[in-house]
Image (cartoon, rainbow, N blue to C red):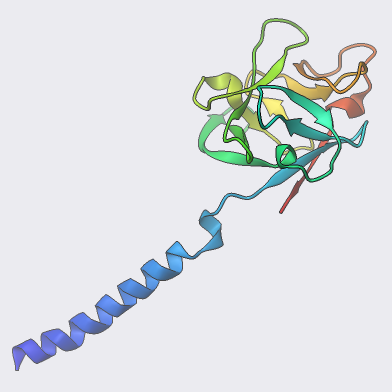
Length: 166
């Protein structure tokens, strides 16, 4: 009699566990969400090359280089309350990278894991790097830079990026 009672408890519990496992593996919550970032000044999108390390502000034509994902690793900035993540090209799996060498810092794509200059936040219609600089477009063509906010002679809308997810 005892084995039948054990079987009656074990089978439903096992089926419940199986159903939870299947439902969890099919959940879209675990899938990466694609984002595009459109600049308020130009109306162009943040674009990464699919074959080089180049990054620019280009046409929002839904090309593979205009789609981005947020990496899973976080960096919490406690004074500001912002959470930073790596901004990853959906086309190449490489991360948006910058440095702090000047007031106008270059941007490029590189393998994820190269340090804090790959951590970004987009909470307030800007793309802010953990180093405190913001992504902006250039008045000279399609270049993008990481610079401190509010430099003289640069329109504030060049620092504004509207994110849309798909």
